[in-house]
Image 1: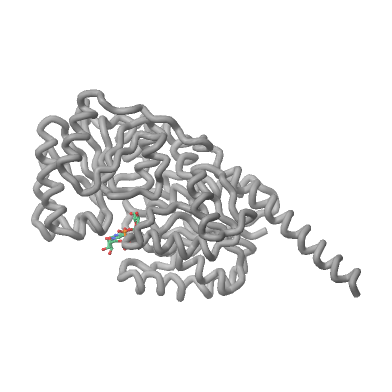
Image 2: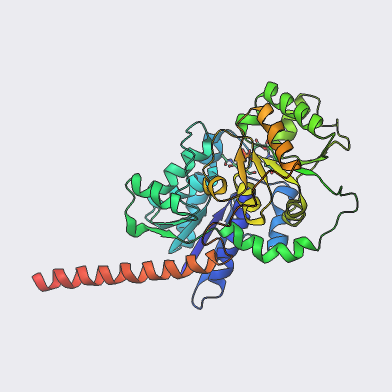
Amino acid sequence: MHILHVVGARPNFMKAAPVFRAFAQEIGVSQTLVHTGQHYEVNMSDVFFQELGVSEPDVNLRVGSGSHAQQTGEVMIRLEPIILERNPDWVFVYGDVNSTAAAAMVCSKLLVKVAHVEAGLRSFDRTMPEEINRLVTDQLANLLFTPSQDGNDNLLREGVAAERIRLVGNVMIDTLVRLLPKARGYTRPDLPERYALVTMHRPSNVDDPAFLKDLLDTLRELGRDLPMIFPVHPRTRQRLAALNQFEDTDNRLQLTHPLSYLEFLSLQTKATVVITDSGGVQEETTFLHVPCITVRENTERPVTTTLGTNVLVGRDMMRLREEVRNILEGRHSRGKIPPLWDGCAGPRIVQEMFHWQKADQELRFARAAGSDSRV
Ligand code: UD1
């Protein structure tokens, strides 16, 4: 059996690694890794392959940046001949980035089976490009692997057949569990005893100069009591540069380049609080029992707020200040780890795929036998 994985952007790499590793244990499975090149800087891409222990991609489509239509279109145009040439039995796509939806569309039209890892998540906010990618990918995929029960509920409500859905847990946590001991060993001499770790890259936050300025002022103010460490995503770097804010860094608010997976995980484990608009970081902090404040009105990962340590503050800077104060004064919950976020989602995905494949073959034989007997 030939499995082809499509990855493109930073959060995809941590999700694909456990699935790739689990398939590598199986006899008779060959794998191809295609990187669309949506993320291309060394510290947004290459460093992850080195740290995650995944082989270098077999193919890099080098699509780079562009508008949504350009990026999605380029992935489709450049991926199609690769699928035709390599002829995989299954294509695995991950998460909700433009590369995910583009690959699902190409493969569905070529009648190649698609498996979506991290299916069913919904923010119910169609102004988010990722929500569109989720909706499209989940309608097209043959097999949908969900991280939590809400994913199954959403898919069933949207009319996805139950036999296509498998609740397997969170693959991102597989990578975290495997690399946590290594991350804990990572030290940084200048690290304050207490600090907040900040990430911010959503267009809804960083593409609005007035809000970005307000956020930065609030972080600087909070930084008087709790130093802020802010590794800056390239999109945010450009927006901060436009505001002449990127160079303006000090001990209260340290702006740094994007960090590697191990560096960032290490900082998360020791943080007093994480302030973010990322999806994956909401999950990782829940697993680590580290308080998380999410600067968004909604989340497609509701278990992180109902069970985990995550609190949504929207774009309300007063609420952000209040929540940081609560955390500094010890008024926060340690949260619980959601079911099946146990480091074994990758092997479960592989087993579930084999079961599905077997059941599908039996059904085809039964149908063929049924039609034979009618002849
Ligand atoms: C993408 C995903 C988002 C995910 C994020 C993780 C979509 C729609 N969005 O957002 O869901 O949370 O990745 O990081 O797919 N850039 C560089 N170097 C790079 C990559 C990007 O400079 O290696 C710059 C480019 O100017 C680009 C901008 O960052 O225009 C945004 O990159 P893009 O891939 O369009 O989306 P992200 O904001 O990274």
